[in-house]
Length: 205
Image (cartoon, rainbow, N blue to C red; front, side):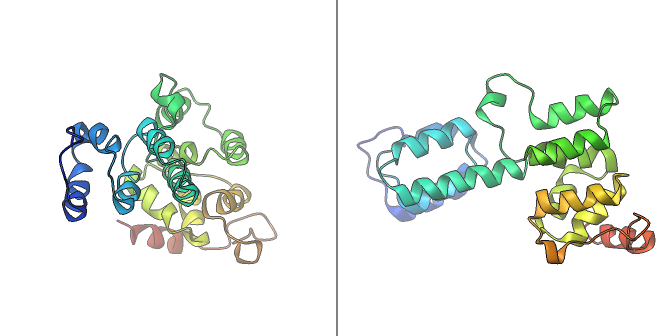
């Protein structure tokens, strides 16, 4: 891959891309190949670092449709907590580290969650829910990735958040439409029983 004059077939690139996700030492060489097929570019954008994804975007800037696809992939990976931003790579606290620090210092409050939801810091919220609910990070990600109003409500409940906050997280994390939102009862409580919420969460383990 580092030898630009070597000829690699599209089929071989497909195979290399499949193997490359677990081989970080290959990523740089792949990104800077001049003959990457479109399919391979889109595939490796799903796992290389933020800096290398930006390099992919720069190297393909003339293909506006591809650039749009790559930027969408970056946004989705950041929202899922799978990708650190360039600033985080350059030394700032990652979303995970910030959520952990806030949790340990006792400032991971409901107000903090609501503010980060308003600011669109979805990766931070995912990790915050992990710490507050004591549900494994991967499981929290799986729950939220369903974009289900009930799933997000259940993990919000487990995290000890108010139902009003759960409504905001349904919007922020799941883009749930107004008509499909699960809303609080007239007294502000969760409209779903605790046994049902617990059972629903257990289905993800």
